[in-house]
Every structure is written in structure tokens, then in C-alpha cells.
Image (cartoon, rainbow, N blue to C red; front, side):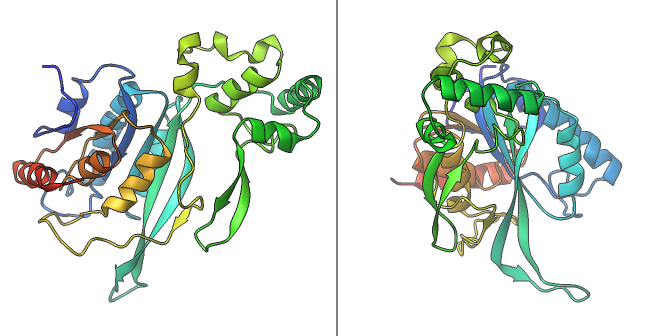
Length: 314
């Protein structure tokens, strides 16, 4: 069975993932079960069985996501640390940010503090080897000066990694994604290496053309994995959960998912959600001109998601 884009399939996530080709997905945005005892979708497993199940779909996500792609998972405090550790076991995946979504509509507990936030783990698939960062930094500085860039800022600006962005509190600041290269304090990403090699002449051992999976005609594809969005901080104060409920207990805001989709994909890219639920990712993709593939094991929620998608007007 060949899976078509812009469809939500009523099937288990592992069954669906096995039908996807290697490196066929640009971005994953999904909201897995939190394993807090609900009677649906593997949400009431023992801790050991839950983590074994997570390990299976994490392994498959690594296989289907393309190099330079990204994965976002929304998770609760009950399981976020354990799931993050499972990702740490995958060599190709790196945690880029641990984002806090401040819901602003949390619920009070009888025996503890109010639960007003959830977690978003943002990973990138990046097969760049770990360098001797001190040696790499010296090489970058020498190559920069030889190429005529007198300051680090001038090179970062040319790489499109030094720009003014608006923070969540309304202030503006400069954001440099590679400002620590020369000091030996920052491991370069695949995107940053490609941009560096297009501007300066690094030593042969740093040439990205020799890296597994990289080809000359992939330069454009791998040149961007993070786009400028409305907020650059790792604490997101909004949006709130949507007032209109669609019959799903953990429905997330469309604007929240659109922020992740716009930050880590381009128009026309394929976005995967293996726990589609009420269809938030599909709607966010439709409103952002992205393609999507979704899996939802519940027939009831799959019907809700497809109905919601049909009602989406642009």
C-alpha cells in the first residue's frame, strides 16, 4: 500500500510508519499519549511497556525523517524525561530545544501546584560528526579572515544566522545561531556547515560533501531547517487551548502547531503526525501550505479529524 499525502489513515502508528520510505518525511509534529491512565490509545500501559512501545516508534521516526528534518513532540511532565532519554539513544537525532508551553488555562491540583504548562521537545536529524571544537574554531577563524570577513558578525549575517527577531515580551534582539564557532563552544549543525562551506574555504576534513547522505543537489534542501517565526524564546506564552472542543480529551491549539510547522519546514514539505487525534496537525498544514500524512488508531477520532479537515476553509 502506497500512502498518499493529505490523508488521515485509521491505523496504528507502527503499522503506518512501516509503510513509509526511508528519509521521506520533512517534519514530524505529534502529540503522543502521556500514559496517565486514560482508556484510549496506549495511555494506560505499565511504565515498562509504555517505554518499550515508545522506543519502537522513535526508531521508526528516525528512519523516515530526512536528514536536516525535525521532530516536535508535545508531552506532559509525567513522561517527558523518560521519552527524551529514549531519543538520546538515537545517534542521528539531537535535542535542539526543550520548549515550555505555558497554557495559561491550567488546572489546580488538590495536593500540589497548579499544572499550567506542557513540554515540547524539538529534535533535529543531523548526521554531522562531533568535532574537536577548539580545532574547528581555529579553522573557522582562519577561513573567515582569508575570505575577507573582518568580523564574526559579518560572516553570521551573510549566513543568515544573525538577524533581529522579536522576543515573546515584545522586545527586539539579535539572534546568532553560530556565534560561538570560533570560541570552540558550539557544535555546528549540518545547515551551518553547508552555509560555511559555501562562503569560506574550510580544511578538507570539514567538507560536507564527504558526509553520508549529502549530495550537491541537496544543498538547497538542507540549507534551511529553522525559519524566523513570531517568537524565538523557548517559553511560549500562547496560544491558549481552543474553546471549541471536538470530542478529543487532549486537543491542542492550531496556532501552536502552526508555529512549529512554519519554523521547521517550507511550503510544500511533507509533515507527519503519527497520533493525529482530532486533526490539529492536518488543519495547521492546510493553513500553512504544507502536505501531511496522519495516522490515528481510533476510528471515532479519525472521523472527527476528517470532518474537521473538510470544514477548514482558507
